[in-house]
Structure formats: C-alpha cells, structure tokens
Image (tube, rainbow, N blue to C red; front, side, top):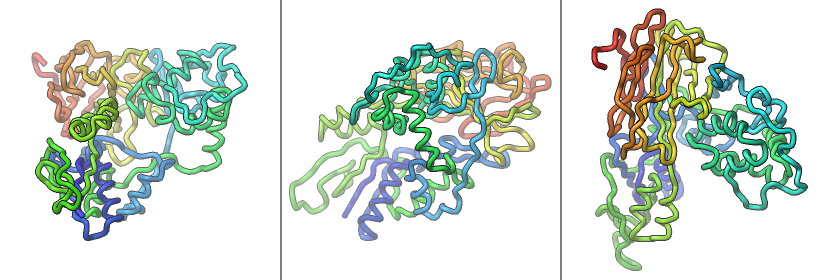
Length: 446
C-alpha cells in the first residue's frame, strides 16, 4: 500500500509512524514537506554553551499522547519534568503573584483574586441547573464575563489563555482550551463550583504537569522520523491533490503532485488544506478553511548581572498595552557564562496576526517592572503596520532608553536581538535561529 503524508511537522510524522505500526513494513510511506527540515514548529537550536527551543519547550502530561510517542521511539528515559515554580502578572508596573486556587485564571473563590481583579458581590449566581447542557460549548470569554465580570477575564483568564494559545478568551472554545472546566460546567450550577470540582479531580491524580526531553524537543522529531522508515522529501510543496481512476485501478486512487497513492494524509495548516480539498470536497474545504491560527514571535535573552526573583516567569495582560505577553525563565543549564536565560513571547492571533509589530528591549529604565530585576522589558510598539505576512515586524529603531528590535517582511527567520552595553546593564540576546549577540553602542542611524 502506498500512503502519502503531506506535512513533515510532528503531526505528520506521528501520523506516518502510526501508519507504519498499523500497515507494517510492506507499506510505502512518503512524507512531503515544503520546508528544508522536519519538525514544523518544533526546533531546538544551539544557544551559547547549551540550547534553546525555537518553539514549544514542553508538553502537558495530562494528555498522554506526547509521552507515549516519546516512549514509542525510545526516548522514555530522556523525559524530564520541569519544576513548576511561582508565576506572576505584570499589572500597573508591579509583579503580582498569580492567585492560588484558579484554573486557567478562573477562580474557585472570588475573594482569593480580590487583589488582582474585583468581583461583584452578586457575581456567579446559582441558577439551580448546570451551566452547560450535554455537548454544549461556549467561548471562554463569554462565560467568564457573564459569571464573574470583565476584570477577571482581562487580568487573569486572558493572560493565561494568551500564554498557551496566543489568543483571546472571546475567540477560544471552552471545550477545546479548558476541557476539564467544560466537563464540570455540565454538572455544576456555578462557575466557581465548576472550578472547585475540576481542581478536586486534578488533585486526585497527583503528578507532574509538564514534560520535556533532555537535550531538546528537537530530539523527538529526529527519533519519530527515523522510526517511520518513510521516504522523506523536503523542499517539496504540494500544489495539487486529485482523485484518479476507478475501482481496481493499478497505481492508487489519488495523485499528489504526480505521485500516486492509495491514501493521503493532510497534516498541514487549515487554509492550505482547504485549497487542496476545494476541488475534491468543497464542503470539507469550507469547514476546514474557517479555522484560524496565531502568530508568535519568540526571543531568547541571556541577561548578565540581573537581579532575578524566585519566579518561573510572568504574564502581561493585554490591557497593560505592551506587545509582549509573557516572559519565562530558561531552565537551568541553558544559560551561558553565568547569564540568566529568559524567553520573551509576543503572540498575535486572528486579524492582528497580520500586523507588523516590534519587540523592544530596554536595559536602563527603572520605571518598568522588568527592569527592576531583570534589566530588560518590552515597551509598546510605536510603529505598527499592516502587511500580508503573519509574524512580520516593524523596522528597527533606537530609543533613548533602549533598542527597538524587529525585522522586515517577509519574515522567514527572526533576527538577532542586539544587546547593547548600557551602563551597568550589559545584555545579549538572540531569536531563532540563535546567534551570538553583538555588544557595543548602537550604530548611527539605527
């Protein structure tokens, strides 16, 4: 049997491995990808004396699929469980610890979040029936705003959702993003009661929350690709998919850019998939084509001489007006020469994914909450532009207190985030692919 898998990301590779396990060694499996490497959004890059992830750093273990995949390809012993330290919210120039007893920012007790978001006394009334019916779904933002108010959504729920899904609560499904809470809402009559029920179920199954792979998540890509025993064709964009022949036709029932196949798997983003399906199944193409994606810019910094708190990172609510939405500390061993590693995330989703924006790192201002202990902070982008390339950025500019960094569209790789030797706060930084940072004064006209 001949099978063509379109897409060489981790989803396409996992599909190819599943096909190999189901069909056996006799199957001829071909993986096509337009990129020059496998892995899609997963990539591990050298960074100083260690490494840095250009995409996801870890995966949740509550869904066992990734853990099982790692075990299937011989990486079970390489699994590591990062410690989940305290996290904070950057609000009004201060770092405020994320309140305990919340699920994706939704509180089990409104009083516990009073220091972050005010909840009215009459909020979350008990209507005497479950919040959701069987199989019913709702936008996270609509549910939280109606039950607990806009402050909880803006200051707690949206930052946490944005850190994971790079989206806003009003655009995200409760069942897709917080399935445990959605399930509890089908039995509980208040949102806070649903949170308590979901947290109680989680407490009944203790264990680590996250897992990663020693040496980088990129090892998983290489191991899965090798286990598929598939023919890999890189730099091979797929422009046509057609059904050919009739029953009993020798050579397969599908043709993928001239390649015959008995079956085809599309493991690519929704819109390219919709274009390939348009001539075969317009209904399927229409259903798939409405799905949207987020664009995320990641920058890894190595900060020297910083005063770091005991935090795993912090989130920045959109209401604070900054382009950057999250900073996370790099795990131990990924820094170089005693510098502290930090990863900055600037997501854009929906229509804003097509906006050019820049990320600014300032190393002298003591007025922002980041400079007070890490020596760098992201200021509001002053040069937004519209462009046709998701993930683009405004041109680089220098300011009196820091350096605007960015790139010119079309963006295929993020540039080096230059580290200027400002008095007392020398830093270097890199974005993917990481490169050695330049240290010195900004060039004239930059």
